[in-house]
Amino acid sequence: MKTTNHKSTYGCLMLAFVCIVVVTSCQREIDFDYPTAVPAVIIEGQISNENVFVRINKTRPMMDNAAAQPIPDAEVWISCTDGTNEQLIYDSDEGCYLSATGLTAKAGKTYKMRATVEGRQYEATSTMQQTAVIDSVYFRYIKVLKERVYFYCVKGKDPIPDERNYYLCRLMRGDEIFRWNTRSGRSNVNGKFEYDMMCSTESAIDKGPNEDDDMPLAEGDTLALLLMTLDRESWEYFQSLNVSQRTTANPITNIKGGAQGVFAATNITRADPIVFRKEDAVMER
Image (cartoon, rainbow, N blue to C red; front, side, top):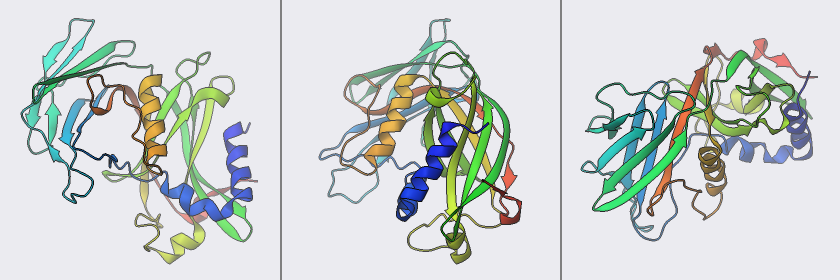
């Protein structure tokens, strides 16, 4: 059974094929380039079933072309109602604060991040959601006029079928994010989901690297999906981050104290990597 997601994607492409390049760029690597007139503290933290990390940077003024610099002397703690209370240690090689004990999150638990940065206090809380199930991943394509448009597709099951679930999808090529987007279970049927991410057009693949897309899909590329369940507040941050990349507005933050960014407890499900070959892609009729 096809979900609303497939049909709406196809309809939008038919009505606005000229926007394909724009849509593709919206799903590319996450760029934390916050528009701000004065220096601001940026906190990007995550605790998951795999690890925990917190990055703390300070932006430069808009006219300063230098990159944001990490703050190595903050005090960062992660706590939980189960009694967890651990101070993270700064790792200069990674440029972020990490757990010395291998701390990970458990579904249903609420975690708090507390950071003291240059004398100011910041904190955020996030609840780790249940695990989503991935049933299959594959490539498909649709024909729009004379062009083929290729998608990475995933089918699976919501962790809680009777509730609205929230996802961050990161499609990885090696260690880099190739495409990303946010999804919610609003249109899922019987607790099952079928999401896709547009990867490229056939003409762009054949053309290879170009100034319009410095991360084109290529024959033989291996892609792997990280499907991350989020609570609504964390999901709203990534949803607004997607929008903010095309506007002058900063994304919504769940961090109290005046910092920008997000602290998210996320449950990660990984799909097996698959190799892209045009001849193996399934045609969507």
